[in-house]
Length: 291
Ligand code: NAP
View 1 (cartoon, rainbow, N blue to C red):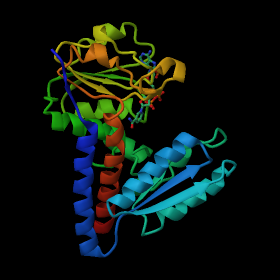
View 2: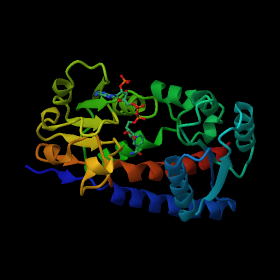
View 3: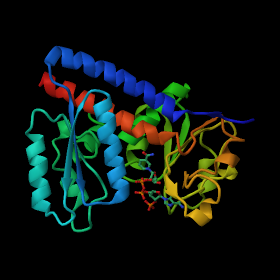
View 4: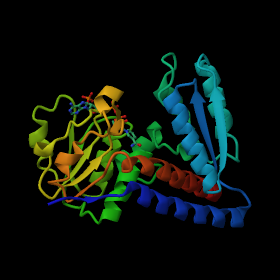
């Protein structure tokens, strides 16, 4: 058996075009587009590329981008003041603090200053708490994108054995909570899990987000499973040889023989994150309008 490939680019393109249409309707009704403010501290090249992609995507669907760039040596107080200013700006519907921050800044503390109604990354304690309580709120974009992919794939989530590899606040924990909210039986694995292959091979839905290249091999994948690879690992030119320098956490060639459906890297989960950021920004704008 060879798995069907879940095309993240195509699913993301459909979400983006839906958002574009809804933005048009919102602008027609209110005269004001949703605004997304991204805050980039310092000049980390990877972060600059991510922020550039978010700004571009935002403009493409008719939203207004606010591109805030702060020097690497900015103080905690200065970042806090910028967040407070954006929280109070009615043109700004969503505020995103690009992580990681330079080491002298406290990322979780600063993220926590974002107005929960504008927290389009879904990472503030208020939105994390709402997710844990099963109440409506803004959800982190990458796990939200995975839920969308599972929906489009027609995965039966209710009652399924789901395993999430990784327990970060950014991805693993919210992913597990979203699957639980959809009635999966969820197991979370991490670096201290004693027999990863034994746990993963039970999964009907296997989601890998450890940040370890090719951690998940054939022995981790149950026959007929849906495999979602969130990992993004850059190989050195020597490791990559003549392949792409970006690989996931799943050994694709091995897993594709056993899975029913699988995401590639690149072109799988990656494109979904920005699409869900746009959807979150639209949702934030609509909620703020009703307030
Ligand atoms: P993270 O904060 O470093 O967390 C990694 C998690 O994986 C931790 O919980 C860690 O366990 C666990 N882990 C590490 N090695 C393991 C092993 N050998 N066996 C089992 N578990 C192991 O990373 P993250 O922010 O969640 O991101 C994870 C990966 O997803 C990264 O490659 C990242 O680039 C990617 N990512 C992609 C997107 C996207 O848009 N496609 C978005 C977010 C993240 P401990 O808790 O015990 O340390």
